Image (tube, rainbow, N blue to C red; front, side, top):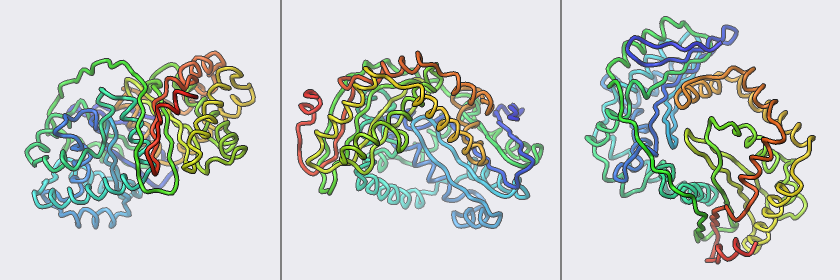
Length: 417
Protein backbone atom coordinates (compact mmCIF):
# COMPACT_ATOMS: atom_id res chain seq x y z
CA UNK A 1 0.00 0.00 0.00
CA UNK A 2 1.42 3.38 -1.04
CA UNK A 3 1.40 6.03 1.66
CA UNK A 4 1.66 9.75 0.91
CA UNK A 5 3.34 11.74 3.66
CA UNK A 6 3.90 15.49 3.80
CA UNK A 7 7.02 16.24 5.82
CA UNK A 8 6.78 19.24 8.12
CA UNK A 9 9.51 20.90 6.04
CA UNK A 10 7.13 20.92 3.05
CA UNK A 11 8.50 18.06 0.94
CA UNK A 12 6.19 15.22 -0.12
CA UNK A 13 7.19 11.59 0.37
CA UNK A 14 5.73 8.52 -1.33
CA UNK A 15 6.27 5.45 0.83
CA UNK A 16 5.53 1.84 -0.08
CA UNK A 17 6.53 -0.67 2.55
CA UNK A 18 6.96 -4.22 1.25
CA UNK A 19 7.84 -6.31 4.33
CA UNK A 20 8.54 -9.56 2.48
CA UNK A 21 11.55 -8.20 0.51
CA UNK A 22 15.06 -7.62 1.85
CA UNK A 23 15.88 -4.54 -0.23
CA UNK A 24 14.84 -0.92 -0.52
CA UNK A 25 14.96 1.62 -3.35
CA UNK A 26 14.73 5.34 -2.74
CA UNK A 27 14.84 8.24 -5.14
CA UNK A 28 14.74 12.01 -4.94
CA UNK A 29 12.66 13.27 -7.86
CA UNK A 30 12.86 16.88 -9.07
CA UNK A 31 10.37 18.49 -11.44
CA UNK A 32 13.12 20.06 -13.52
CA UNK A 33 14.56 18.89 -16.81
CA UNK A 34 15.51 19.95 -20.30
CA UNK A 35 12.25 21.81 -20.91
CA UNK A 36 12.96 24.13 -17.95
CA UNK A 37 16.23 25.44 -19.35
CA UNK A 38 16.93 28.69 -21.16
CA UNK A 39 19.01 28.53 -24.34
CA UNK A 40 22.19 29.56 -22.53
CA UNK A 41 21.55 26.92 -19.86
CA UNK A 42 20.79 24.11 -22.29
CA UNK A 43 22.05 20.87 -20.72
CA UNK A 44 22.36 22.26 -17.18
CA UNK A 45 19.90 19.75 -15.63
CA UNK A 46 21.95 16.86 -16.95
CA UNK A 47 25.20 18.59 -15.93
CA UNK A 48 23.91 19.00 -12.37
CA UNK A 49 22.97 15.32 -12.31
CA UNK A 50 26.60 14.46 -13.09
CA UNK A 51 28.01 16.93 -10.60
CA UNK A 52 25.95 15.56 -7.70
CA UNK A 53 28.33 12.58 -7.67
CA UNK A 54 31.52 14.68 -7.66
CA UNK A 55 31.93 15.43 -4.00
CA UNK A 56 30.13 17.00 -1.05
CA UNK A 57 31.28 19.05 1.92
CA UNK A 58 32.20 15.85 3.77
CA UNK A 59 32.78 13.30 0.99
CA UNK A 60 35.01 13.25 -2.08
CA UNK A 61 33.67 11.70 -5.29
CA UNK A 62 35.61 8.53 -4.49
CA UNK A 63 34.24 8.44 -0.93
CA UNK A 64 30.66 8.72 -2.23
CA UNK A 65 31.27 5.66 -4.40
CA UNK A 66 33.07 3.78 -1.61
CA UNK A 67 30.37 4.53 0.98
CA UNK A 68 27.72 3.26 -1.44
CA UNK A 69 29.75 0.11 -2.08
CA UNK A 70 30.13 -0.49 1.66
CA UNK A 71 26.37 -0.86 2.00
CA UNK A 72 25.95 -2.87 -1.23
CA UNK A 73 24.34 0.21 -2.74
CA UNK A 74 23.50 0.53 -6.42
CA UNK A 75 23.40 4.27 -7.05
CA UNK A 76 22.62 6.24 -10.19
CA UNK A 77 20.62 9.12 -11.64
CA UNK A 78 18.93 10.18 -14.86
CA UNK A 79 17.67 13.36 -16.48
CA UNK A 80 14.59 13.62 -18.68
CA UNK A 81 12.64 16.29 -20.49
CA UNK A 82 10.74 17.38 -17.39
CA UNK A 83 12.27 15.60 -14.40
CA UNK A 84 15.52 14.46 -12.81
CA UNK A 85 15.89 11.52 -10.42
CA UNK A 86 18.71 10.56 -8.04
CA UNK A 87 18.34 7.07 -6.61
CA UNK A 88 19.95 4.27 -4.63
CA UNK A 89 19.01 0.65 -4.00
CA UNK A 90 20.43 -1.29 -1.09
CA UNK A 91 19.73 -3.96 1.53
CA UNK A 92 16.95 -3.15 3.98
CA UNK A 93 19.43 -3.16 6.87
CA UNK A 94 21.27 -0.25 5.24
CA UNK A 95 18.26 1.93 4.39
CA UNK A 96 19.13 4.76 6.77
CA UNK A 97 22.74 4.88 5.54
CA UNK A 98 21.55 4.96 1.94
CA UNK A 99 19.17 7.82 2.72
CA UNK A 100 22.01 9.77 4.35
CA UNK A 101 24.30 9.35 1.34
CA UNK A 102 21.54 10.38 -1.08
CA UNK A 103 20.54 13.41 1.00
CA UNK A 104 24.18 14.46 1.43
CA UNK A 105 24.75 14.44 -2.33
CA UNK A 106 21.49 16.24 -3.02
CA UNK A 107 21.93 19.02 -0.46
CA UNK A 108 25.68 19.41 0.07
CA UNK A 109 27.42 18.90 -3.27
CA UNK A 110 30.34 21.31 -3.60
CA UNK A 111 30.30 21.84 -7.39
CA UNK A 112 34.05 22.34 -7.34
CA UNK A 113 35.31 24.39 -10.29
CA UNK A 114 38.02 21.85 -11.19
CA UNK A 115 35.52 18.99 -11.02
CA UNK A 116 33.11 20.97 -13.21
CA UNK A 117 35.76 21.48 -15.87
CA UNK A 118 36.67 17.79 -15.77
CA UNK A 119 33.05 16.65 -15.92
CA UNK A 120 32.29 18.88 -18.90
CA UNK A 121 34.90 16.84 -20.80
CA UNK A 122 33.10 13.65 -19.77
CA UNK A 123 29.79 15.01 -21.09
CA UNK A 124 31.48 16.09 -24.33
CA UNK A 125 32.41 12.43 -24.77
CA UNK A 126 28.82 11.43 -23.97
CA UNK A 127 27.65 13.78 -26.73
CA UNK A 128 30.10 12.13 -29.15
CA UNK A 129 28.82 8.70 -28.11
CA UNK A 130 25.22 9.68 -28.90
CA UNK A 131 26.34 11.30 -32.15
CA UNK A 132 28.13 8.07 -33.09
CA UNK A 133 24.91 6.11 -32.52
CA UNK A 134 22.70 6.77 -35.57
CA UNK A 135 19.65 5.18 -33.91
CA UNK A 136 19.96 7.56 -30.93
CA UNK A 137 20.52 10.50 -33.26
CA UNK A 138 17.36 9.62 -35.18
CA UNK A 139 15.25 9.42 -32.01
CA UNK A 140 16.62 12.69 -30.62
CA UNK A 141 16.04 14.49 -33.90
CA UNK A 142 12.46 13.27 -34.40
CA UNK A 143 11.63 14.63 -30.96
CA UNK A 144 13.12 17.99 -31.94
CA UNK A 145 11.02 18.10 -35.11
CA UNK A 146 7.75 17.06 -33.47
CA UNK A 147 8.08 19.62 -30.67
CA UNK A 148 9.69 22.39 -32.69
CA UNK A 149 9.02 25.70 -30.93
CA UNK A 150 8.19 23.98 -27.63
CA UNK A 151 10.69 23.44 -24.78
CA UNK A 152 10.18 19.66 -25.12
CA UNK A 153 12.27 19.90 -28.29
CA UNK A 154 15.38 20.77 -26.27
CA UNK A 155 18.24 18.32 -26.03
CA UNK A 156 18.82 16.77 -22.61
CA UNK A 157 22.59 16.89 -23.14
CA UNK A 158 22.63 20.45 -24.47
CA UNK A 159 25.45 21.45 -26.83
CA UNK A 160 29.19 21.82 -26.39
CA UNK A 161 28.76 25.58 -26.71
CA UNK A 162 26.01 25.85 -24.07
CA UNK A 163 27.77 23.49 -21.67
CA UNK A 164 31.06 25.36 -22.01
CA UNK A 165 29.35 28.60 -21.01
CA UNK A 166 27.74 27.28 -17.81
CA UNK A 167 29.53 28.70 -14.77
CA UNK A 168 29.30 27.57 -11.15
CA UNK A 169 27.16 30.59 -10.28
CA UNK A 170 24.74 29.80 -13.14
CA UNK A 171 24.51 26.18 -12.02
CA UNK A 172 23.88 27.13 -8.37
CA UNK A 173 21.25 29.69 -9.36
CA UNK A 174 19.41 27.08 -11.45
CA UNK A 175 19.36 24.69 -8.49
CA UNK A 176 18.08 27.44 -6.19
CA UNK A 177 15.28 28.31 -8.61
CA UNK A 178 14.26 24.80 -9.72
CA UNK A 179 15.10 22.47 -6.81
CA UNK A 180 12.33 23.74 -4.53
CA UNK A 181 10.17 22.00 -1.94
CA UNK A 182 7.09 22.06 -4.14
CA UNK A 183 9.09 20.49 -7.00
CA UNK A 184 10.67 17.64 -5.05
CA UNK A 185 9.21 14.20 -4.25
CA UNK A 186 11.04 11.50 -2.32
CA UNK A 187 9.92 8.00 -3.29
CA UNK A 188 10.81 4.94 -1.19
CA UNK A 189 9.82 1.35 -1.93
CA UNK A 190 10.79 -1.87 -0.18
CA UNK A 191 11.51 -2.96 3.39
CA UNK A 192 12.54 0.02 5.54
CA UNK A 193 11.96 1.88 8.80
CA UNK A 194 9.64 4.73 7.85
CA UNK A 195 10.47 6.90 10.84
CA UNK A 196 14.25 6.62 10.41
CA UNK A 197 14.19 7.33 6.68
CA UNK A 198 11.72 10.22 6.92
CA UNK A 199 13.72 11.79 9.74
CA UNK A 200 16.81 12.01 7.53
CA UNK A 201 15.01 13.66 4.62
CA UNK A 202 13.08 15.92 7.01
CA UNK A 203 16.33 17.19 8.45
CA UNK A 204 18.15 17.66 5.15
CA UNK A 205 15.55 18.87 2.65
CA UNK A 206 14.16 21.62 4.86
CA UNK A 207 16.84 23.98 3.54
CA UNK A 208 15.34 24.08 0.05
CA UNK A 209 13.47 27.17 -1.15
CA UNK A 210 9.70 26.80 -0.79
CA UNK A 211 8.38 27.41 -4.31
CA UNK A 212 9.47 27.98 -7.84
CA UNK A 213 7.91 30.18 -10.48
CA UNK A 214 5.67 28.12 -12.72
CA UNK A 215 6.37 28.38 -16.43
CA UNK A 216 3.72 28.94 -19.07
CA UNK A 217 4.40 27.37 -22.46
CA UNK A 218 2.96 28.77 -25.66
CA UNK A 219 0.75 26.48 -27.72
CA UNK A 220 2.68 25.76 -30.91
CA UNK A 221 0.83 24.43 -33.96
CA UNK A 222 2.41 21.19 -35.11
CA UNK A 223 3.52 20.98 -38.73
CA UNK A 224 5.34 17.94 -40.15
CA UNK A 225 8.97 18.50 -41.11
CA UNK A 226 11.81 16.37 -42.42
CA UNK A 227 15.54 16.03 -41.89
CA UNK A 228 18.32 13.94 -43.39
CA UNK A 229 21.54 13.39 -41.44
CA UNK A 230 24.44 12.14 -43.55
CA UNK A 231 27.00 9.88 -41.88
CA UNK A 232 29.49 7.27 -43.00
CA UNK A 233 27.45 4.28 -41.83
CA UNK A 234 26.53 0.83 -43.13
CA UNK A 235 22.79 1.02 -42.50
CA UNK A 236 20.11 3.72 -42.78
CA UNK A 237 18.03 4.58 -39.73
CA UNK A 238 14.45 5.76 -40.25
CA UNK A 239 12.38 7.46 -37.57
CA UNK A 240 8.95 8.94 -38.27
CA UNK A 241 6.71 10.46 -35.64
CA UNK A 242 3.67 12.58 -34.87
CA UNK A 243 2.00 14.20 -31.87
CA UNK A 244 0.36 11.83 -29.39
CA UNK A 245 -1.31 12.21 -26.00
CA UNK A 246 -0.25 13.50 -22.58
CA UNK A 247 0.42 11.25 -19.61
CA UNK A 248 -3.03 11.65 -18.03
CA UNK A 249 -5.05 11.64 -21.26
CA UNK A 250 -8.12 9.41 -21.29
CA UNK A 251 -6.62 7.69 -24.34
CA UNK A 252 -3.25 6.98 -22.72
CA UNK A 253 -3.80 3.24 -22.33
CA UNK A 254 -5.51 2.97 -25.70
CA UNK A 255 -2.39 4.53 -27.22
CA UNK A 256 -0.15 2.13 -25.31
CA UNK A 257 -2.15 -0.86 -26.56
CA UNK A 258 -2.22 0.40 -30.12
CA UNK A 259 1.55 0.90 -30.10
CA UNK A 260 1.94 -2.66 -28.88
CA UNK A 261 -0.27 -3.97 -31.70
CA UNK A 262 1.52 -1.94 -34.33
CA UNK A 263 5.12 -2.43 -33.33
CA UNK A 264 5.61 -3.57 -29.74
CA UNK A 265 6.30 -7.30 -30.06
CA UNK A 266 7.54 -9.98 -32.46
CA UNK A 267 3.95 -10.69 -33.48
CA UNK A 268 3.19 -7.01 -34.10
CA UNK A 269 2.12 -5.78 -37.52
CA UNK A 270 5.27 -3.81 -38.31
CA UNK A 271 7.58 -6.63 -37.23
CA UNK A 272 5.69 -9.21 -39.26
CA UNK A 273 5.41 -7.01 -42.36
CA UNK A 274 8.71 -5.11 -42.49
CA UNK A 275 10.99 -7.82 -41.08
CA UNK A 276 9.38 -11.23 -41.45
CA UNK A 277 7.55 -10.83 -44.79
CA UNK A 278 9.65 -8.25 -46.63
CA UNK A 279 13.02 -8.83 -44.95
CA UNK A 280 13.73 -5.08 -44.95
CA UNK A 281 14.89 -4.58 -41.37
CA UNK A 282 16.45 -6.38 -38.45
CA UNK A 283 15.06 -3.85 -35.98
CA UNK A 284 11.63 -2.26 -36.42
CA UNK A 285 9.29 -1.05 -33.69
CA UNK A 286 6.89 1.67 -32.56
CA UNK A 287 7.04 3.66 -29.36
CA UNK A 288 5.02 6.27 -27.49
CA UNK A 289 6.23 8.89 -25.02
CA UNK A 290 3.86 10.93 -22.87
CA UNK A 291 4.67 14.08 -20.92
CA UNK A 292 2.60 16.16 -18.52
CA UNK A 293 0.96 18.25 -21.25
CA UNK A 294 1.55 16.44 -24.56
CA UNK A 295 3.21 13.42 -26.10
CA UNK A 296 4.36 11.79 -29.32
CA UNK A 297 4.31 8.50 -31.19
CA UNK A 298 7.12 7.27 -33.42
CA UNK A 299 8.14 4.35 -35.59
CA UNK A 300 11.75 3.25 -36.12
CA UNK A 301 13.37 0.94 -38.67
CA UNK A 302 16.99 0.17 -39.52
CA UNK A 303 17.31 -0.77 -43.22
CA UNK A 304 19.75 -1.05 -46.11
CA UNK A 305 20.48 2.30 -47.78
CA UNK A 306 18.70 1.21 -50.95
CA UNK A 307 15.55 0.17 -49.05
CA UNK A 308 14.57 3.44 -47.37
CA UNK A 309 11.64 4.15 -49.69
CA UNK A 310 10.49 0.53 -49.60
CA UNK A 311 10.48 0.58 -45.80
CA UNK A 312 8.53 3.84 -45.71
CA UNK A 313 5.96 2.34 -48.07
CA UNK A 314 5.70 -0.72 -45.85
CA UNK A 315 5.13 1.46 -42.79
CA UNK A 316 2.49 3.48 -44.64
CA UNK A 317 0.79 0.24 -45.64
CA UNK A 318 0.46 -0.75 -41.99
CA UNK A 319 -0.83 2.70 -40.99
CA UNK A 320 -3.40 2.54 -43.81
CA UNK A 321 -4.43 -0.93 -42.71
CA UNK A 322 -4.86 0.35 -39.18
CA UNK A 323 -7.32 2.93 -40.46
CA UNK A 324 -9.16 0.75 -42.97
CA UNK A 325 -9.19 -2.70 -41.39
CA UNK A 326 -8.68 -1.59 -37.82
CA UNK A 327 -7.66 -4.18 -35.18
CA UNK A 328 -9.22 -7.50 -34.26
CA UNK A 329 -10.62 -8.49 -30.90
CA UNK A 330 -7.85 -11.08 -30.67
CA UNK A 331 -5.14 -8.46 -31.28
CA UNK A 332 -6.61 -6.22 -28.60
CA UNK A 333 -6.89 -9.07 -26.09
CA UNK A 334 -3.30 -10.12 -26.80
CA UNK A 335 -2.04 -6.54 -26.41
CA UNK A 336 -3.85 -6.18 -23.08
CA UNK A 337 -2.15 -9.31 -21.76
CA UNK A 338 1.23 -8.04 -22.99
CA UNK A 339 0.78 -4.63 -21.35
CA UNK A 340 -0.45 -6.13 -18.08
CA UNK A 341 2.40 -8.63 -18.08
CA UNK A 342 5.05 -5.97 -18.62
CA UNK A 343 3.55 -3.83 -15.87
CA UNK A 344 3.28 -6.70 -13.37
CA UNK A 345 6.80 -7.92 -14.11
CA UNK A 346 8.04 -4.41 -13.35
CA UNK A 347 6.11 -4.32 -10.09
CA UNK A 348 8.13 -7.28 -8.86
CA UNK A 349 11.19 -5.00 -8.69
CA UNK A 350 11.52 -2.38 -5.94
CA UNK A 351 13.31 0.02 -8.31
CA UNK A 352 10.43 -0.09 -10.77
CA UNK A 353 7.89 0.48 -8.01
CA UNK A 354 9.86 3.44 -6.70
CA UNK A 355 10.18 4.92 -10.20
CA UNK A 356 6.48 4.51 -10.97
CA UNK A 357 5.23 6.00 -7.70
CA UNK A 358 7.74 8.86 -7.71
CA UNK A 359 7.12 9.91 -11.30
CA UNK A 360 3.34 9.77 -10.98
CA UNK A 361 3.36 11.81 -7.78
CA UNK A 362 5.77 14.35 -9.25
CA UNK A 363 3.96 14.91 -12.56
CA UNK A 364 0.36 13.96 -11.73
CA UNK A 365 0.14 14.55 -8.01
CA UNK A 366 -1.16 11.04 -7.34
CA UNK A 367 -0.21 7.38 -7.43
CA UNK A 368 -2.03 4.30 -8.72
CA UNK A 369 -2.50 0.85 -7.24
CA UNK A 370 -1.74 -2.22 -9.30
CA UNK A 371 -5.44 -3.02 -9.35
CA UNK A 372 -6.27 0.42 -10.77
CA UNK A 373 -3.71 0.09 -13.56
CA UNK A 374 -4.88 -3.42 -14.50
CA UNK A 375 -8.49 -2.23 -14.51
CA UNK A 376 -7.61 0.76 -16.71
CA UNK A 377 -5.91 -1.53 -19.23
CA UNK A 378 -8.71 -4.09 -19.23
CA UNK A 379 -11.38 -1.41 -19.66
CA UNK A 380 -10.00 0.02 -22.91
CA UNK A 381 -12.72 -0.32 -25.54
CA UNK A 382 -12.61 -0.70 -29.30
CA UNK A 383 -14.01 2.81 -29.62
CA UNK A 384 -11.05 4.17 -27.67
CA UNK A 385 -8.65 2.19 -29.85
CA UNK A 386 -10.33 3.69 -32.92
CA UNK A 387 -10.00 7.18 -31.46
CA UNK A 388 -6.28 6.59 -30.87
CA UNK A 389 -5.87 5.13 -34.37
CA UNK A 390 -7.43 8.26 -35.87
CA UNK A 391 -4.60 10.30 -34.35
CA UNK A 392 -1.71 8.24 -35.75
CA UNK A 393 -2.96 6.46 -38.89
CA UNK A 394 -2.36 9.26 -41.45
CA UNK A 395 1.27 9.30 -42.56
CA UNK A 396 0.80 12.84 -43.91
CA UNK A 397 0.88 13.98 -40.26
CA UNK A 398 4.29 12.43 -39.62
CA UNK A 399 7.61 14.17 -39.40
CA UNK A 400 10.55 12.08 -40.58
CA UNK A 401 14.27 11.70 -39.95
CA UNK A 402 16.66 9.47 -41.85
CA UNK A 403 20.28 8.96 -40.85
CA UNK A 404 21.97 7.58 -43.94
CA UNK A 405 25.19 7.65 -46.00
CA UNK A 406 24.18 10.20 -48.62
CA UNK A 407 21.77 13.05 -49.20
CA UNK A 408 18.24 11.98 -50.19
CA UNK A 409 15.04 13.89 -50.92
CA UNK A 410 13.12 12.72 -47.85
CA UNK A 411 10.35 15.28 -48.25
CA UNK A 412 9.65 13.97 -51.75
CA UNK A 413 9.67 10.38 -50.52
CA UNK A 414 7.19 11.16 -47.77
CA UNK A 415 5.02 13.20 -50.15
CA UNK A 416 4.85 10.38 -52.68
CA UNK A 417 3.70 7.74 -50.24
